Image 1 (cartoon, helix red, strand yellow):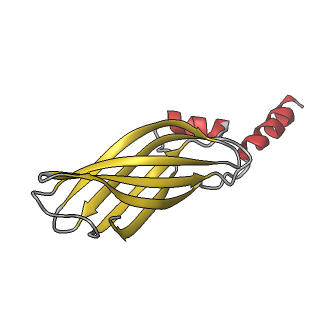
Image 2 (cartoon, rainbow, N blue to C red):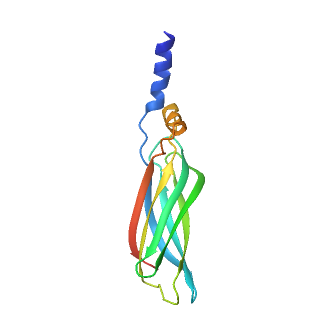
Image 3 (tube, rainbow, N blue to C red):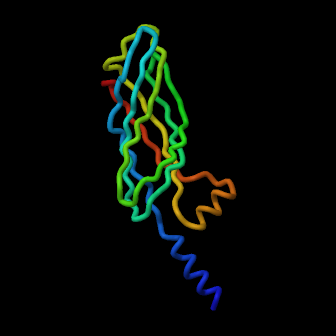
Length: 143
């Protein structure tokens, strides 16, 4: 009887969790000098689940073909609320050597890692299995 109660309680832990939706809202030229440029990428994250999702990390790359790129990994340290949205602003800096980037094509790609709730996910994490991720990628001219 105890085994049945534990298994029944455990089943609640196995409800399916959908990936958060990640949309690239903007890729903006935030500043420019003769030597470099600052770029800001704005992401909108949506949680379609009825449970909050802790965000673990964001890894991304910003590249302007023919000019250069920037790669970074950031500990997100935030929670995406159940059924809610959140905005992330990702900074990047690229050496331009005097090249004007206004209107230049920019490739942004990356992923957001999250930690679904439940005992099974906790065991997987403790065993070294990576957290699930949601990828994003877009190519846009710099505004």
